[in-house]
Image 1 (tube, rainbow, N blue to C red):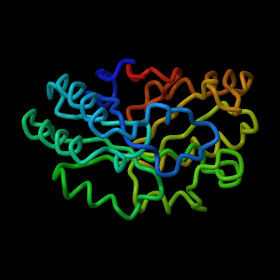
Image 2: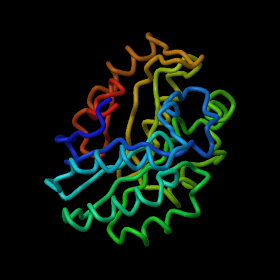
Image 3: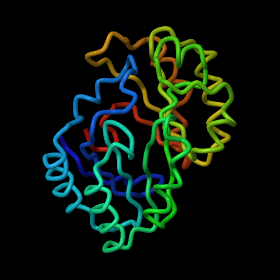
Image 4: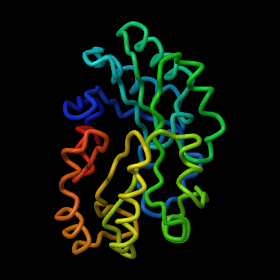
Length: 227
């Protein structure tokens, strides 16, 4: 597994994939990323400290992801990230958090004392599909509720059961955010399956997002270079 990479298009940044404690939610039907979780803090920190040694500060921007939320990282790992931020002159951070932590984001902002772009995996703004099928545990009804807390929604396309209309609406909604990530779903070990015809339609219609500086689009799950 590759845990360090550089994103050299759009918002240039270094990115690290760290280990974390088990996801507090952990019930999403499409997600098998949680297999990277660990309950041994010492083992988690050993992996993360080694990964963080790769950070050079080249772009002044660092994205930190894990198989859960930033709140599932250990205290030692958080302190090590802060040390890297200070030593490598990092001016901006990207973190991801689940909806359940929306009222605690300022804790992370206060700890790091640099601007943070908070991502959230909403997967879709269609509430029925997000909660009824994907079991996301983010029961908001309107994108403006997300805007109150988060800067950058992550949406997923190409899942059986999604419709073109649902995706079109999601693509319109993400224009209201300063940044967004679009992931094309890849089959994994879960029961949720990819809709190849829907993916083909999406890629043809929305290929232009590759040139949108405000949207990261992942045609493959490893397009960020980690995973």
